[in-house]
Length: 237
Ligand code: BJW
Image (cartoon, rainbow, N blue to C red; front, side, top):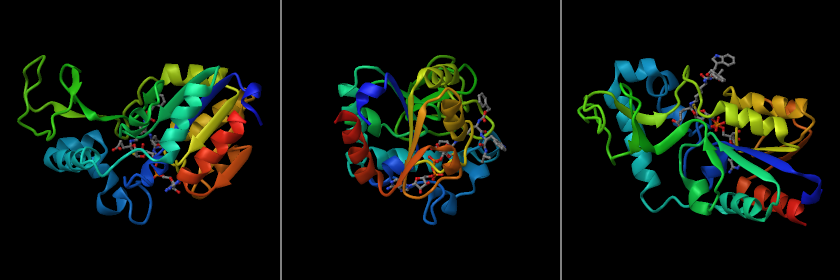
């Protein structure tokens, strides 16, 4: 399959694309949800009940992301190369809140579940670069109220970001590739069905079959750092 056959590509990435960079996934046996209960740290109710715990969860992840030990891997770089060499429309939708796609050179990126390096005021909606350690006494730079500063991430029950742009790109795409995502969380897990419905070729690249594996026309299993450069080279060949 050469890139000449594809006019528009949408790539969806999940935690698996960053696993080889040293960032924990969520649902692995040693994943984040083994140490934390999802509803405690990734829901508005959890934040209301224990903001200290939620701030600590995200502060620790932010510190690690900025520590220097976490760097983009071959999968991030291959996707940036694909975008740079592809002549059609290219959109990278990531569920990840890290900035590794941007550090690798990707340009047209939507962070549908938000960004760890940003903070948002729950009162006025102001979005700013995150301070290293968010806390409950932080004041908003715009409305000056305290207690409303939260990570700029999308928790369960909240609406993912830029959904109209995402669905519009999927409706126009003829190649949809999902990489390193378990297919457990919606609406992202439903994108493959939306892409298949418009006739796009659909590809799953993952360590193991996802929960929505049967919806994909083509699937390859192994580490993203190996699979993604291999697959990208088939598109560039
Ligand atoms: C490798 C690898 C390697 C490892 N190489 N691969 C009942 C039915 C259907 C839906 C619902 C329902 N009840 C409620 C819902 C909706 C709910 C939902 O989906 N719940 C499910 C649990 C059932 N969804 C929501 O609430 C969402 N909002 C919503 O639906 O709003 C309504 C709406 C929809 C559409 C339009 C408008 C409005 C919000 C979801 C928010 C998710 N938030 C989180 C946390 C915040 C960010 C953060 O803290 O980082 O986002 S949860 C967490 O899961 C995080 C991730 O982005 C997300 C997805 O996880 P991901 O990336 O798939 O990671 P894993 O760990 O699950 O999988 C990793 C994969 O990689 C595995 O398969 C490994 O094998 C693989 N892997 N190493 C390649 N080296």
